[in-house]
Image (cartoon, rainbow over all chains, first blue to last red; front, side):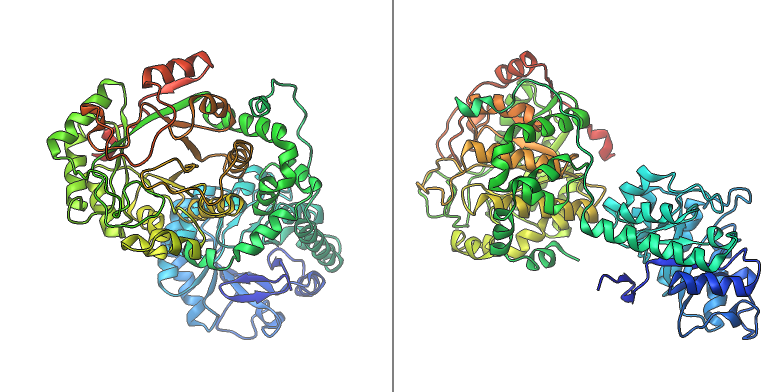
Length: 256
Length: 370
């Protein structure tokens, strides 16, 4: 089985789903079920983790899904660390999707605060999945402090533009020693397939499902995109040919 | 995970079988992919790729020019000591050989270094055997401190050390390490190293990681070609380089391809590497490791070195002498092996310029050490 392994835990699905922006909890659940996902991320600021009847949490079957709380809304490392600790104190597993996004317009992640928070949370025993810009050196700094994955963005959150950071993500995939999850910006199943074809280990999708006319079937469409991309990656894509170039021979001396 | 554990997952016979099973279609795929992986690398090393030597060389050339331009970094080895307690069967310094033994004094070291300085070298490679009493880490550190004012970069090619040992020499001013595994075949390694501290395969294998963890800027690895089967050795070298690049990403890697030369003691290569196979191996490594420095020493002939130049090489030595004291005293007794390209550094530099390459004498600065 070609499972996704994160922090020694195995997942059959390589599609993670976010729970923001859905028009109803029913639509959210339909998207989750359609997608076949096993990891769902929830913004801690949106939920009351102490209340089992919280409107979002009550709809997420914790037997079926790993609840991955995220620190969305945190403006610096201190806020992110505080949120993560609150979630753990409330009984969540010590997994945290680290998001530090001080810029309220594009919600772009702050690399310096993210690295700081990651270091603290890893030492504190958390399994940390950091959301980052597609910065290969930052990815390496994060894996060095012990994050379980890196989650570079394909495009700013909610833009549905696809893998616009393609070249940098390719470098991250080439160099990473932890799973690479392309997060944010994927607006269509073809975008998810593209990321997976490149060798990403998983993708995370939210807006594209939440704003679809029919989130359930869109979840299923993304599942197929992710699976197709993964299978193509494993099967070895046919390569684009280099253009032939006429040049003087370099190995003629071997024939003398 | 250490490279030792990675290597342990591979069965060398299986690597060879997989390489030999590669077909022309696999080679064509590998030649056209943007970032060849390990499977592509096997195809490029395969007998099937021998028919694709010219396109392989063209690709290696283009990649190298794109990444490094037409430049060659010039360096010179300086042998500090040929005393050695190891029994490496292929080496002129083998403790059983009756060559004259010598460890240079600090003054003699400086005399040697001044000759190299006058010839234009600013990148120096200090070489010793393994003789803890004659040339220990303190001796090495003292030599580096003495030479530091003259040279912009000082590398070492000595016995493997612990991380603490590497920290000590880095603090003294060393910025580069060359350490060849000789062979990645544990069984053959044991046969080739019948006695001495070098028998410890695992400690040697871990040395590049120790150095990288200590903060070494540049690390050079390689297998001694002529010992194990060259395709397997090349594959393991590539695997080793990739491992170091992933886990110690601040370190710049170089790879050398020392082909066995006649040495005192008369050891004959077990698996001689032909020029064709040598070219294929260098080009395949370039495709796997576009950013690695590839080093060519004076072990090879002038004619071959000139022809190998455009295939991916980025560093060359010139006018080398492999015995302690050989530069200042012009005495070649007690040498490690016989060099082949005996042109002077000025002659090699002139050849490089004629061929459109810029010989680079200084590409580092001791100010990085402050």
